[in-house]
Amino acid sequence: MRGSNPALNDSFDTVLDANGAYNDIMTLEGTVSKSLFLIALVIGAGILGWQMNTMEAFAPYMHEILITCSIMGLITALITIFKKTMAPTTAPAYAVLEGITLGIFSFRYESIYSGIVMQAILLTVSVFVALLLCYKSGLIKPTENFRLGVISATMGIFFVYLLSFIGHFVGFAIPYLHESGPIGIGISAVIVVVAALNLVLDFDFIERGSERGDLPGYMEWYGAFGLLVTLIWLYIEILRLLAKLRDE
Image 1 (cartoon, rainbow, N blue to C red):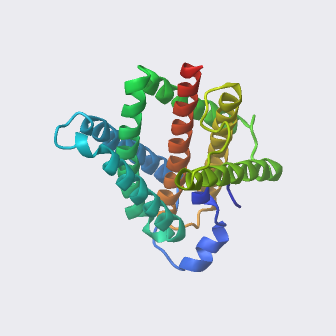
Image 2: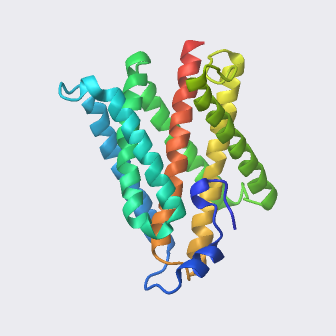
């Protein structure tokens, strides 16, 4: 089984073939507890990142701290993806680095749009709960066509963002992507929907992996990490969409 989240896109059989024997196994309860732990780390680190903006010792260097934590977070995520056995160590590290990044990022948005961060948090939680209920009730089923559609859309968004990042350094911009007009708002809304649908594939990955009863215990951390990646992406996209709506 493959998911659209890059963190969860390796087949279970590959995990078994590559890593041989192990003592503990992946369970749903274990994955849920580790997911809650990682989310708690993000929240704690996010509060720290937020407060650093108001600390005299850190305030002059917030841009550098933001860039450093972002790059280190990306590196940690890549290590986790390509070396799953390290997930028990790298997943918490990723949560802390991304938490600090989100705290700084959110503070900047809040300083421009009062109240926007709480709105984004509430919407992210609401979307998560709604999709979890839809998944558990069978209202949304991750069929092969569903997976293919979400994977294709996610990869398309990834390449658009990659081009936008490159364009930032070479002097060109993707039209409408960061603009606040009707088209820009529409693009952000579509991206939010795609990010949200990735949650369904994350739920499916975790549930199927737990039901197998033969996956190594470190896959609990890996599944929790993949879910966290999607939640962070969803929160950021909702924050950007709300900012565009405020500007309109």
